[in-house]
Amino acid sequence: MIVQLKLIMSNMYTVLMQHIPVLLKEVVDILNPRVGDHVLDCTVGLGGHAKAFLENIGSKGFLVGIDADGENLKMARENLKEDKNVKLVQGNFRVMVSSTHDTFDIIFADLGLSSPHIDDPTRGFTYREDGPLDLRFDQTKGLSGAQLIAQISEKELADVLWQYGEIKSSRRLACAIKEQNVQSTLGLKKCAEDIVGRFARKLLPQIFQALRIAVNDELGSLNILLQQGPSLLNSGGRMGIISYHSLEDRMVKQSFRALDPSTYQILTKKPICPSEEEVKNNPRSRSAKFRVIQRVLE
Ligand SMILES: C[S@@+](CC[C@H](N)C(=O)[O-])C[C@H]1O[C@@H](n2cnc3c(N)ncnc32)[C@H](O)[C@@H]1O
Image (cartoon, rainbow, N blue to C red; front, side, top):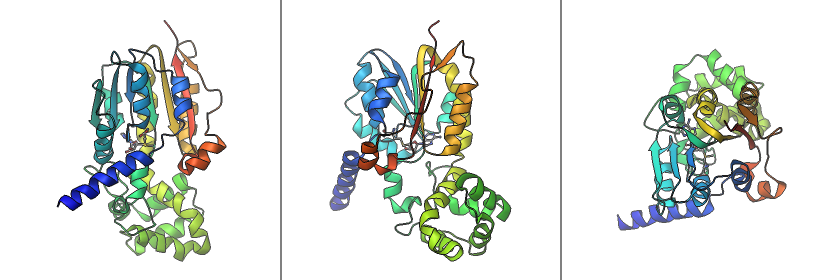
């Protein structure tokens, strides 16, 4: 028992030490957290960006951090335990932004999954080791990847693979996944290898990403954030979103462009992307695109 506990603590410590927040300097530079600011971190994860916000807003500021994943939230709690002006909430940010009456100086979202998701084979996000095909950020709610595959039709599954993963053999792959009643990560990997042969290596990240987007309804949540977020900004407030998928970046770009320019100014004419050096140090940052708007001073 004590050995197990020590192992859990040391894993937790290792994860915190290894966690590298994406575009951290750029996020702080452009969102410019100031003393006393109220911040909403929609995807607090392990608290990497949140820590930097808290360092800048001081004890007069306040940060609300949301994450759908209870395990990540535990690590954020540990990472931010010195800070008293923090409220961490487990849930989907779409619920918070649709129901809150609070307003903020900074709203931030760093979309998608986090390193611990990929590192833990029991969560279903990796095919390096076998595990259940779960793929949920919030394991207390909704259908797992395996359940979703069982519930939707072959055509719907092919659409998911095509629309979110641009998988050319989406129909054949969907047919094989349904026929083989895939339940596990290695089961899905084998199925992909059967259908696309040597291309599986290249396509597997896209296949897993497509299913993950569907399982968590990630585009639905982003859409609600884009609709509600700007109106929750205080005068002069900034909203920034880091996305990792071309569909998400397109949604962010189009939604920011559709805002009334007399009320909201786009601060990033082009998305901010990680430098070569950042990608070298943190390959998971390679597809990041960061866009920011500001509510004009009224
Ligand atoms: C890229 S990580 C964030 C990392 C964080 N910025 C940090 O520095 O530690 C994305 C996080 O968002 C969470 N997440 C994704 N979609 C969400 C949603 N709709 N609502 C709440 N949390 C979400 C995931 O569970 C994951 O922990």
